[in-house]
Image 1 (tube, rainbow over the protein chains, first blue to last red):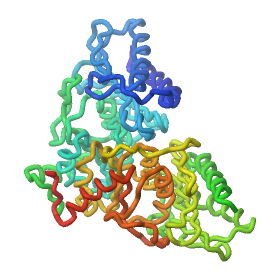
Image 2 (cartoon, rainbow over the protein chains, first blue to last red; image 1 turned 90 degrees about the vertical axis):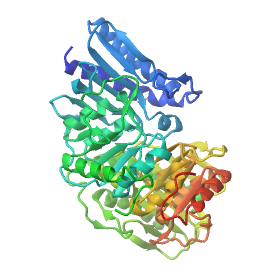
Image 3 (cartoon, rainbow over the protein chains, first blue to last red; image 1 turned 180 degrees about the vertical axis):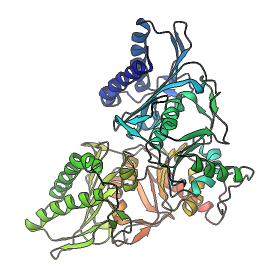
Image 4 (cartoon, one colour; image 1 turned 60 degrees about the horizontal axis):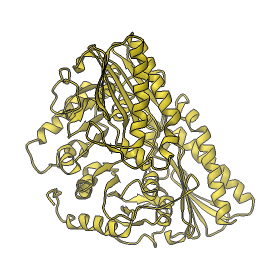
Length: 280
Length: 280
């Protein structure tokens, strides 16, 4: 299958998610956990429902002759024949929001030609609450709801969003950067942070706890194709990250290179201080 | 008019907003500022459009014999005859999100019987992106999309959301509380923070910069009617706050009293330390 055909599969999955998400979340018992997923987070009925939609679509692709491996937040790793391609899936990115009734969560899907991030070929993120649909094919730009998106070329960190899965240790590390922002945001869905950064809504996105590839791979391609930059928190390339269920690296993502350097310098200047300095 | 009739007017306003918001935001030039509103924030075409809907509905109420004063983020104060009642309006709460394409912003409307917050009679908040509609009539409970909502009775700060209009000074003040959270959130719409707190999605909401009454009055009544607590950041009552265009007090809002005391103690313990302590 071509990358365009893969994107069509991802869009079909997104459509099914959007059509069924409200009824699924409102179902009796929909917020009682079922256990823990392969990624270590609690699995809720909505996560299971979402993953079933993904698996059903991928089984269809496999029946048509595609061989690939799925790595997903809930079930872990599943092989669909012998092939190099990898599909990374986070069925519901922002589960905490979804199960508590906050309309800000997404499905994130990426296709890679091998097991390293430099072979990212397709990225797809859909905001399941508001409907915004983002995608990118490598080398062909990034799109939001069918329209080409580009990050802002203006230098400056402006609005900084972040994700902190351990606020006690993460926030002091991110504070120097957050303190320089015009506004901060913390929405609770890494895929959407990267997608809205790609569409020009923010200046910088950062995490201090290492993220897992299925959380950020799709958003990463969308961001890069929109003109943005993403590295680990110290500026290291993510190209050779081997995708799996493990947490890989904390992230720093920016709307453009100049802003990225600025954000990195703010963070590096402060990394040896145990108490955050806010007097810069 | 009865409070129920006022609520119907607010719901009509909400419906018009929801029906027209997407087209208004997508209009050419929709994100070029028109000037500054009475509240000091930049006014965008979407703010003006939203305020016009509110004024048109209020003119209808005035023609039917109601006398009241409107205090609104954009136009400031306008009298509709001589009367004690006050309508507080934030046409678009979360303008930064709205104009940058992030689907998280709201309209906030409150009715008071006089100029102090202890006379709050009706509160109405609508999430213009996702559609969630919250309201409360004093003494009659709080509702989300027509269903009664209640905050959680469990003690513990859990998820803490905040608003920081000056991150450099606000974040160090809030950091002790944020560091104790399981997760932090910063969505960028105070009215929605209070409304989702009321519906059980969060444990605590805090601001370090003083908020303006039209930002929080509607959400305040919804929260209190759902079982929550709201004071200034040091625990002082907001009952005698005189509503106007000025910033009044920084806010601390919690799902229940025990959690409120816990959050306040965390903040008070740290208020004399210029550098935030994160080793509690």
